[in-house]
Length: 134
Image 1: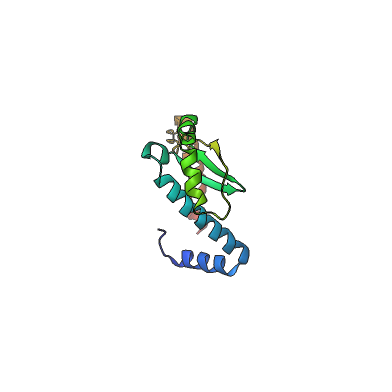
Image 2 (image 1 turned 90 degrees about the horizontal axis):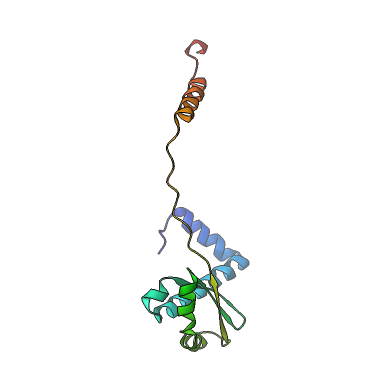
C-alpha cells in the first residue's frame, strides 16, 4: 500500500475528479487484481518472473523476465485462460507472452580520476564568494 501523504491525497483527488484519469486508474486497479489472481495460481518459480501487462481483446498479455519463463508460462495457458474467463466479461482465447527483461540495478558510480578531482576543486574555488567584495 502506498503511504498517505498530502501529495498522495491530492493526486488521488485530482485522479477521481478527472474522468479520463479515473477510468485509467480503475483499469490499472482491475489489471492489478487480475494479475495477482492469475500469478497466485502459478508456481512461485514462474509467478515471480511474470506479470499480466494488459488484457487486449481476446488476449492476455504477459511480460516475462526471460524466454525460459515464457516457455514455462505457456504450459499453464489452459488453466490461466479458464481462470481469467471467470473474472472477465469477454473470455480470453490466447496468451501473448513478451520477454521484457527487468531493469538493471543502478550502476555503481566510479570514483573520480585525479584530473577530474583537480577540475572540480578549481571550479569550487572559482565559485567561492570573494571576501573583498562584501
